[in-house]
Image (tube, rainbow, N blue to C red; front, side):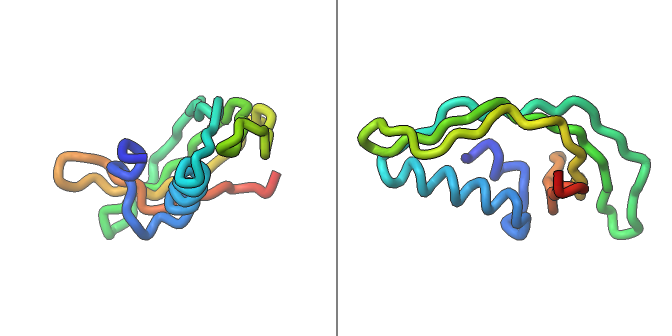
Length: 107
């Protein structure tokens, strides 16, 4: 989780939820396979006066499977359909940080 959290702020609710889910699974001795995120496109022309940048990213996630400490499959997710996410980021201290990430549509 260190690489993801290095480019986000603690207030990013989506990022914190992903971190919590992964830490819960591994903390109980389980593991997750798959789930690779692929960014297909990013479009941004919006900069707010407070230095934040708004972008729309099209992201797809590969199938993932969750296992408990005994090796039993507990959850499976198929490959997701590419969907649009809104990303709010700031460039500060020589790096980009995500301030918030969220799905634009419920599908």
